[in-house]
Length: 361
Image (tube, rainbow, N blue to C red; front, top):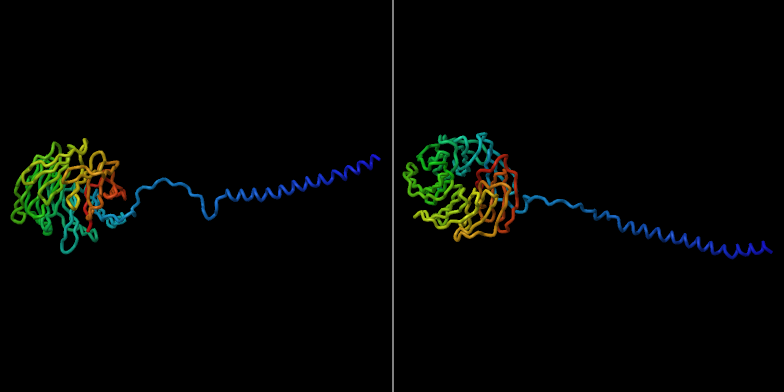
């Protein structure tokens, strides 16, 4: 009787055990595909790789075409519109302080002057050296070529201005123009008027007579309380702007010598000045590393401001007036879009401060 009861119990409970086992097995079977699917959904898709964040990059050189420029430090480089050097000239004569461009024998000619006191001519197409002019007045600090391409004015560290028939290599005249270094030279459009500035704080206007064989002082302005660092001609040649280590931008009437405007820029001093091609805007660089724009007519500051780690040494506008080029004490060339207030390129251009700039043809 007991044996019969046990057999009956096994028959009753056995199906329940089978059902439970089957239920567990079916649960595992369904769970595995779900987990696998979840795993697949969390894995990165082969077609969309995970992007690793990258730090911001410096301004690129290809946001817009750059003006072709020639820069000078201890060597000379010509830069193309992508910011690449296409020509390098190594005079091995020390610092180069000034550049000018002229045409000789149908060839574009680069003129340089610097620490060795010699003016050197270079074929701009090949970089080949040409004639030299022995100025003999100490380091050359400024150059300007007349609008008719005939007479080169050379300013020197001892304050002398000399005039040269540069294509023939002939000295025309020389005058002790300033009591300290000549810091700026500009020709007026008439070919016969030359404006100079000096570390002696003076702006002087000169008349060139007898095809440059005589240079006569027309007027003089005691313009600043410290050395003048840059000048620019304004208003069709009737006004001149000047900047100085005294921290001011000044505008003067050339005919009367009267001060038109006095604009404070920087307590540490102003290092560079350039006027836009239309004559309406002035750009200044200062010892704080700032580049600022000013309305040349009203003297009011414009919204643009560029900031550099080192002071600008020289400023240059593009031919269309849309871009400003800065050569700085940190050896760089930087390019600024004045319409967007943005720096579009910065190039480690030289191994020492950039001291001179001219637009390349």
